Length: 232
Ligand code: DX5
Ligand code: ZN
Image (cartoon, rainbow, N blue to C red; front, side):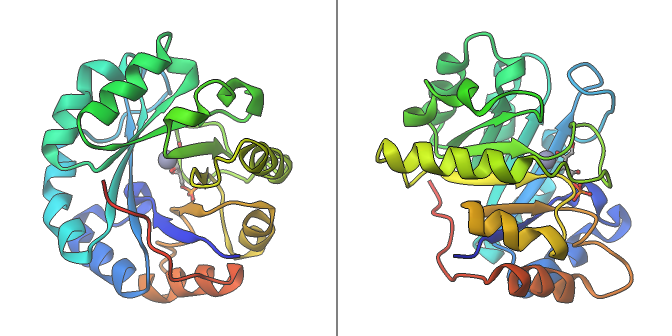
C-alpha cells in the first residue's frame, strides 16, 4: 500500500526552516504538518498562525497540503486565523471539542479539509459518528505535547480496526494519519494496517542524514505510492 510522509516541523531546525522544508519536499514529502500547542490541552507551547503564514509560500510552491494539528482548547476560536494564514487542512481533537460536529463543519465551511484526532487512550469508537464528515482521521501514537517520544505499539491495531470500519461503511476516501514516534522500523506495519499519512518529526529531521534522504528512507520503508493528498 504505502503512505504519504508528512514532516512535523516541530523537530525542524527553526533557524533554517525554509531550507529544511524545501529538502523534505525534494525528498517526496506530500504534506507539511504544523503542531499547534497552547499549554492547556497539552503541557507545551509551540507556534501559531504567524508561522503558518511564513510556511504558506513554501507549501504552495511544493504543491503540499499545509495541515495544522490543533492541540488546543477551544479550537473554534482560531479556525479563521489559521485558514487565513494559509492552512489547507485543520485537525482538531475529539477530547478538546464538546461540539465536534459544529467544529468540523466550520472547517469545511472555510474550504479546508477537516480532520479529527484521538489520543492513544481514546478508543477508535469515539470517531464513529463523525467519520462521514471528515477527510482525515488522525490516531495519536504518543500522548500529544512533545516530539521525540516512543511509539505506542497498540496504535497498529487501532489503525487496522479503523480501516475495517471505513471499508465496512464505504468511507475508504477518509485518510488515516498516524502521529508520534513514527520511524522506518514501524512505518511498514502501519501502512500495511491501513495508514495513508505518516507524520514524522524526529526521524525526518534527524541530523545524521540529509532531510530529503530521511523522507526517502521512510517512503522506501513503507512502499510509497504516488497518489497525492488532494487539496481542497
Ligand atoms: C506530538 C506531535 C507530533 C510529534 C511528531 O504532540 O503532534 O506531530 O511532534 O514528532 P515525532 O516524530 O518526533 O514523534
Ligand atoms: Zn502532530
